[in-house]
Image 1 (tube, helix red, strand yellow):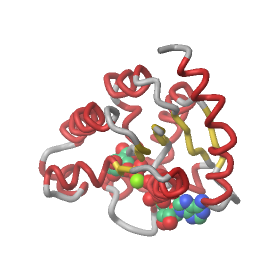
Image 2 (cartoon, protein in one colour; image 1 turned 90 degrees about the vertical axis):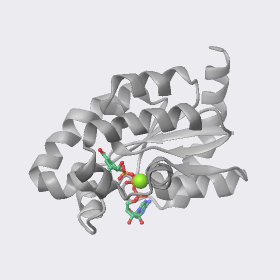
Image 3 (cartoon, helix red, strand yellow; image 1 turned 90 degrees about the horizontal axis):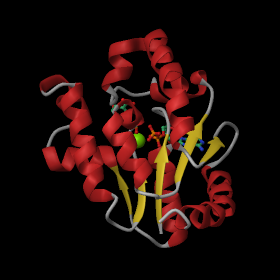
Length: 175
Ligand SMILES: Nc1ncnc2c1ncn2[C@@H]1O[C@H](COP(=O)(O)OP(=O)(O)O)[C@@H](O)[C@H]1O
Ligand SMILES: O=C(O)C1=C[C@@H](OP(=O)(O)O)[C@@H](O)[C@H](O)C1
Ligand SMILES: [Mg+2]
């Protein structure tokens, strides 16, 4: 079982990935956590000391490895900003689910803590610009979009469970 979750910061990728893996009895990995372990640094430290461009390259290199393995991948919200990473994800033929909601719904969730450097840097209005800039990229990349508002993680899992076989079939025909 392979599956990739994409979406803006706070859309629930990390939370839902764990749920999906539990349901399908498979592994899951969070791209941020994988990179933090590799680098032995927090995401805030990587942005501050190495910069955002270096972090995007780390995401690309980590994904090159992770898409070879079975399981669910929770990506970071910025993977769509890098063309080579978008291409890598698309050509993997792994089902891609986009977790989507209104900007304010994301903001309510991400403004609760300071673990995300771009939230601290851009603030409410700057982050909204980034949200609208990225949203079409998520839509284009995804095989299916789930609207997360007013849904529990279990409801989202049920939606994925229903949609997945059709998407797997479609992608298998492309291989
Ligand atoms: N379906 C949901 N309903 C309510 N809260 C959620 C849901 N999914 C995620 N959350 C909460 O939203 C916050 C951001 O979730 P997270 O999984 O870290 O998002 P992402 O990895 O996409 O940035 C967390 O506090 C999480 O507990
Ligand atoms: O959207 C982004 O550029 C980022 C999203 C974060 O992951 P989440 O989407 O899991 O919050 C994390 O990779 C980093 O703070 C940058
Ligand atoms: Mg996350």
